[in-house]
Image (cartoon, rainbow, N blue to C red; front, top):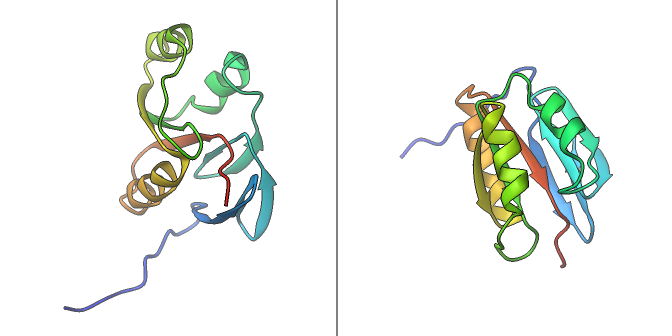
Length: 119
């Protein structure tokens, strides 16, 4: 099997994580945060609809990383984003990071909203 390095082009992948942060573009960004191909920004959590909705303007799917374990998201949160035409996939934050990078490498229109993990 041949292995090749993934080329993300100008897009910004998630490079790693630690206690309460994610490493993006060489910088440790405190969680919760939102990330797309252009970079990362702080996120106010489930009540912060407006900034997340604007952040997902050019996105088809939003991966919601609920922390160390997968958990339910508020129905109103899901409803508002789905009404804006954004598909939502809920998973643990670590799974969301991996899935985000795979979809990003496929040049998909993806973003992630991530809560912190414990190490």
